[in-house]
Amino acid sequence: MKTSTVIPILAGLASATPLGNDIEARQSCPGVYVFGARETTAPAGYGTSAGLVNQVVSSYSGAQSAAISYPACGGQASCGGVSYDNSATQGTAAVVSAVTSLNSRCPSTKIVLIGYSQGGQIMDNALCGGAGATLNGNALAAVKAAIFLGDPHYSNGLPYNVGTCKAGGFAARPSGFQCSPASPNIIKSYCDAQDPYCCNGNDANHHQQYVSIYGAQALAFIKSKLG
Image (tube, rainbow, N blue to C red):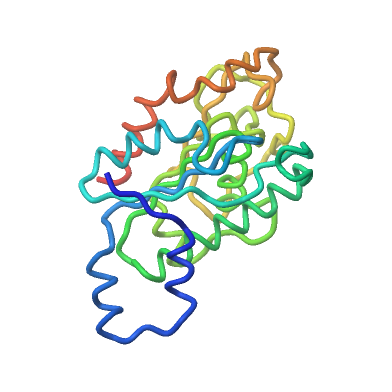
């Protein structure tokens, strides 16, 4: 399993590259690349999304992955006091930037997005709108599958919902919401009724269980989209 970070991708695009080096870079592009985004207050890295990220990377020879770099904060001192809304806005921009940059360097690479809790919300925003710029054009087309785990944007009745929640999260999409510009066919959003963040339950521990409960199902969906 090979992993990389977002920073080298961005750095590689920031300066002009000789043609020979550009060809070499494209030849080294993986067939599958996974971006993961962590939940609020989780240390820098993948957070709880790591379990599913690792399963996807292990399933495809040469696949690579990177964690989205963003505050993942909700006003707590431990993450710099950044407000939840500000953190989500920064995270959304980071997703759009990272995916667009990778697609520019590796236009044939198939991209998977996996976000946990606030990490799911920023993936949701990047695909379906709600916090500034969204993915578009070739970068959007390169995203073949997206998994939201415990996404606070969860709202009952959306076509990509999976789980027992029949309500909505604390940042639920409004009634009648339709995902755009992404196709809902590439998305699965997992939330159960016990969850107090993506639903209206009272079991905070359940919020951390989606990879163990739905990981195999989510992996099968991703594989169906990657071919």
